[in-house]
Image (cartoon, rainbow, N blue to C red; front, top):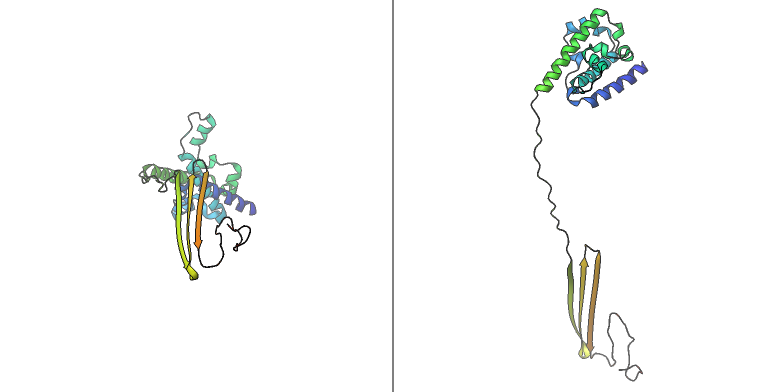
Length: 220
């Protein structure tokens, strides 16, 4: 029984991958009328055997629906004209329980499967074609960055007690070239102060000199 279940799973997966359109139709065993099911001997098969039979029918229907190769061998041509049970291997017939059927039941089963396959193939051939909706191509909205110069300027002014005042300004320019992966920045700043304290204070953000008192050797 375990072997039967493993083969059943393999057949179901294989049949589902081969023919998605055919697999979406009714199963062969479900499409039969009760009287025809009895004439084919299906009531004497187990549920697992019936499921295997449905999977084999779907696989065989997909194989029959495929276009024959132009260089088909005589064995392939003979297989196409054989009945359903003749196209199965001995192991597949045993797994599906066909060995338990009489010759008359097997003949009725082959005939019923042939009618079922012809109806499914005719329905697939007569189905209207499916057209895919036309889709507009995706147009990128982000523009490619070109070479450019960016910069910033700042000015400040401050006052304090004792006549103190301070004026400062700075400028930064940046050259960017994305194509070459190059970037260069140049900056300049200057600050002027006066008054406020009895000593000179040199203000520079890059070079910070110590405070100088009058009389100091470094006093300018």
